[in-house]
Amino acid sequence: MPVVISQLKWFSTMIFPSVSVCFPAYNEEKTVGSVLEGAYNLLISWSLQFEMIICNDASTDHTGEIIDSFAKNKPEVRIIHHSFNKGIRDTFEELNREARNEFVFLNSTDGQWKTEILIDLLQMTNKWDVIIASRKIKPYGINRLFISGVFNLIPRLLFGVNTYDAGAVKLIKKEIINRFPLISLSPFSEAERLIKAQKAGYKISKYPVEVEYRKTGKSTAIKWSVLSKTLPDVWKVWWSVQMAKDYPGIQREG
Image (cartoon, rainbow, N blue to C red):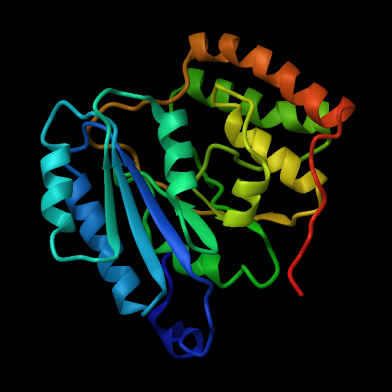
């Protein structure tokens, strides 16, 4: 949901936390340039304390070249190039580890999620530690909708935690990333960190947004084969959380 222009004066009086804006990219040559330029211009126009980190996951098209060209003469931008494709889970975690600021915002480069939503999420950080940009409508096929529903149902049934839309874009405190290293090797990792964070006392909320259909590129979304690989991770996380209580409580500053 875009920020209304009439709110600019009010927002300008707010002090936002520093943010690391991260982008994974794999074969997104048709959209990556415009997405990155739009995000950078937004961050500059709002005078935010920010860094941008972009990870090219061994793209086979011109994505890497476009990213390098974009980053020239922009000291706030850092680039990571993989020599081989590591996949979305490991790429996400590398970006999370590399982030240096108070909050981390991890977006996609396919144009489905507008970086403008970050401004709305930042204004919620005085009350919440994680804000999930939950999708009002998921523009996907029946199979993916079903699999997504299963992933969102598991945390509620097995852990008593509502992760809302765990696979969505989110704004999360860096200290949560540091405090809860992942044991999941599958897409369940997105839910794992939210489950442990909420169990430890961190506050999680959602902010409904509209997303666009992917117009180009190829989705790396979860498939049926991945769902079966996720079940061992669900068991490992369940044991870690429900039995071993492997989630240290909050130690807030001040």
